Image (tube, rainbow, N blue to C red; front, side, top):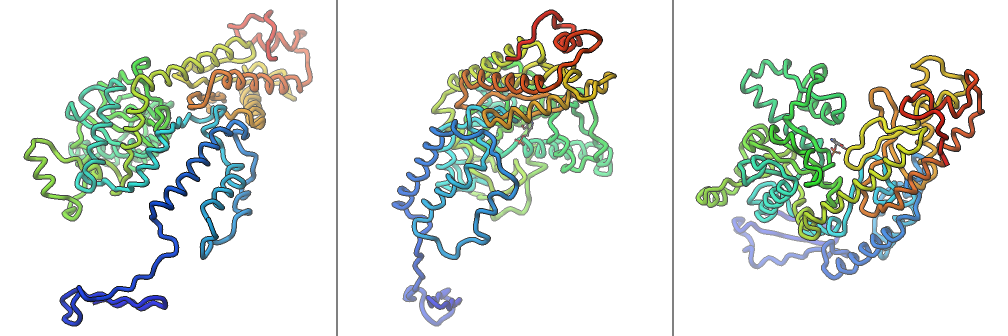
Length: 510
Ligand SMILES: Cc1ncc(COP(=O)(O)O)c(C=O)c1O
């Protein structure tokens, strides 16, 4: 028997065995909530507010500077120090006003058609609405029994996507493997490294843990090293080597048929992952991971003593039909999980594989156009071949020689000055607010990255982006005092260092 005594209510419940009051006759006075958290009519009203807000945002997104001009702490200073004890009237509308007036000015607009930094997080109506629906249903499909349809939709949709990507049959459920939807590639890498580690330790003995090594190239994403570290691989045991292909990480630049060479290595791989939230219209977050031997993954990540979580009758019924129950909790780090399949299923149904192919092709074409513009402009170079829709470019290091305050003498100085020049260029480009790009350092060389792939990006945005780069480069180079070097003109000095550019050709920076 439990008794609750509060100022506003007195509740008595009986467990039936107490022998005092029969449970059926107990009157329970529950406090009524002033704001029922789940109320269908209120949900309809509030939902419209949010949907209209998002739609208005998309129609005006181009008006915002892509990257905000704010200093750390700008938002905290404008918000109360503690949460309200009680909500104000129509609190959601008031909160949305704050989103518009306080939060959006400090947001980097990833969905802007002029956001070219990092990677494109392609969004879609149905991707966002799939998220909303999953949030509304709010199920937790950690086992098949915990939400059978959510689990089975994930099985179906990962096979659908795997086929669309031309993955080998052996990575699909239909071929004895199988896929799952996680939040990020980092999770996929961690799970698969742990499975590979355990498989190896079973072979060589746990005492050899310190000898285990992972191989990756100097271009492998840093998250791979991080995952290896979390999996207990010693820091020094990350070794440079050829891509052994155990887990090709698409990192979200997935390929459809037109780019199928990208998945060529998957034949030899034990697992493969890619992020549909990076190019395939499945709003954050959605990482698809496929494995050839699900048993290796579940052996590493499965948990014993989970009688409470498993539904033996469901497992039995499925086993009788000859299929194994998929309990996705054994394919990931966490127990709880989101119903991501709904969103990806929406995307695949509403856009179709051909629709996604068209999207990818359009972005690759825009990137090729950007690359062509860079290559046509002599002071610039494309130091790393374009991959998909990512163009890496920079002002040639030789240009730095003529803008440096102190003339660079040896090769290292020229390289350092070139890096500094490009750093300044990126800063100037991003400070315009008209575009946002990011950078990388490859083999000590600082490069600018233009990653094309946002749903709202059109060719005109790509052309404008290039104009901004040209304008800023012109301004930076023009601000430098024209000097004569070895009796030659500045123009000639800039181009001389590069054998592929005719020295007589005029620079076109304007
Ligand atoms: C190739 C590659 N691998 C891994 C990652 C990390 O992805 P996530 O943020 O999904 O963990 C990225 C992110 O851009 C990537 O490009």
